[in-house]
Amino acid sequence: MNLLLLFDTDFQTATGVRLTGRRLEHVRDIHRLQVGDELRVGLLGGGQGTARLLLLERDALELEVNLNAPSPPKLPLTLILALPRPKVLNRVLASATSLGVARIILVNAWKVEKSYWKSPRMEEANLLHQCILGLEQARDTVLPDLQIRRLLRPFVEEELPALIQGTTPLIAHPGSGIPCPRGMTTPVTLAVGPEGGFLPQEVELFGRAGFQAVELGPRVLRVETALAALVSRID
Image 1 (tube, helix red, strand yellow):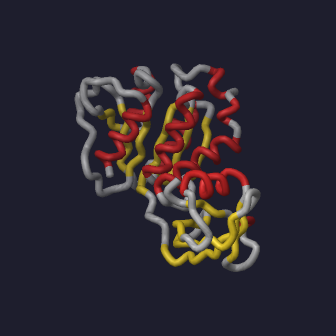
Image 2 (cartoon, helix red, strand yellow):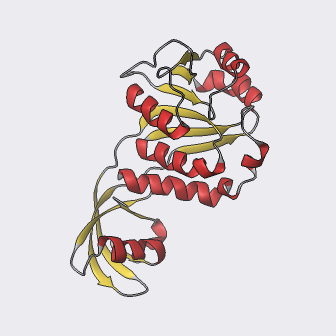
């Protein structure tokens, strides 16, 4: 945790915060702070700064907070992501959030098993928790705009044409023969498929909507690895 993320409900006064639970345990057991020490904090959806530890007890801690700095800007990037396997979903969401992706849209694909959508990891509380972990890692306070679309074809044909306006639409597809561009200066809409990529028919569907298929090379990468590599090139 590189940033202690605070919520409006944590504030007892304008600058006074009281915390329990996971964040208390992290400050006490991982950071091992003592009364009088300072740490970096941020308000969800707001600014960030520092806080001084006023009280540290077994069941709670109290902080005096000074929020005097903005959070880092989001990347002008919309990520269209085929729903990963449940055990991978948490890592990918946290990673995409820490990379600064502004919008994440989870979509269906032929290789996405129906059971993935019924996983407990798709519950709203878990999705939010993973994004919060990404914010804490990256010292950010602004959540990505997270959306879910269960039907791929209607989404691509009916929503995407308007969504990609003013952006460069790309779809990651091994074997396309076209290298992913570097250092984009315009906003990007990036589609990333499941393990092994989208089916050719799905790539054609995105192509009819205006997407250019690109690749990172001959290797087929795990979703979380491919995502980090793609974002590093595009940014």
